[in-house]
Image (cartoon, rainbow, N blue to C red; front, side, top):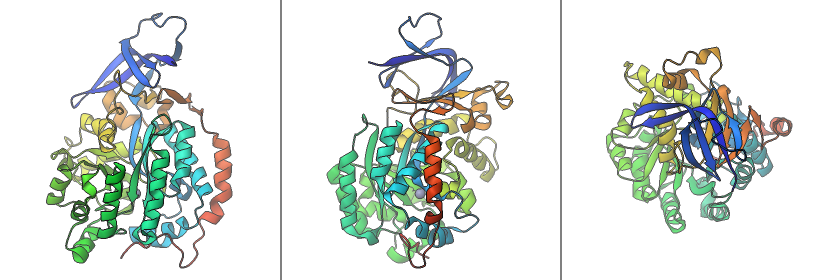
Length: 441
Ligand SMILES: [Zn+2]
């Protein structure tokens, strides 16, 4: 059984809604789990136990990314300063028709490298050619919930194909991989198709990861076409009977919110995308008051530039205070709870999101030696507003060290850079009439 101890670090936790810090503690890891967290006592570890020096570092759980399109890092910067409809129809959907499985493989490597560097150890990913993403999750050491994105126009045959992916990878990589179904959205998958998805998900006993109610226009169009909101469509199709990740869900009605609260569904939000795309923002108290799980998401890098949840966390706190013109909103405890435990709840993963004995050993060490991290009058405020992805020093997932001293141990970044650059010119071509889907207008 492999094991090690992280010596003399500060440990972040939550006591109820209050942030709690234990200074000068050791974290004992046995196999893929945290065994104990004890005050540092030099020499206690004995000569045989491998040590990681945590002096001066802050230990936090690995961040949980509740909605992403990881290989989209290939299209970072490819569609800037354009509204959502153009973004989809004139740039992203045409460019995505160029993707090959090999492109997705190298994109996944780049995206996962970026996430490890940013202290993210879990991602709920929603994209194409997911066998390639699963392969990279396996070799990189990350933990993931993977859903193959499907559109109705691809047909039930395509949906069936993705179920083979689901059975191939479910529980693989020492249990680090979970596979769900990924119908794209109620605007690109109609009621009957969604109904079939719900059946398939039930048969396979899995969850569903889907975009929903992203803009008011989508809700209005759904009401005009079906006399139902997108959330009501998902309910009536049976999707919400399954564990469900609702990506974005910025425009649920009051009734929709109650429907979500009554079902095993959670919401992943990426405020940076909403700010950049001018999609508007939602008062998060409306989810929280009803006990709806809420977590942070990066979305794809083509809409949010970075796979960085520290940035999303900070933007969520700031925008909530801003839209409600109230400094008391989105308190440190509330935001930190969303960032860690909230993400675990959205992804239905009760064994991550917390540094406590018995939890899976997904641990991140942040350096606290930049001037901006000093002094530590309020470590929780530093964590939300001053520290960031660039302070991540060491990343451990499932008891395996993936990065140490900012050096990636499972991914060769120089090789990834070269392979990605070699593909760019072809990937950004836009051939008239060729796109993976059409965003309805
Ligand atoms: Zn998305």
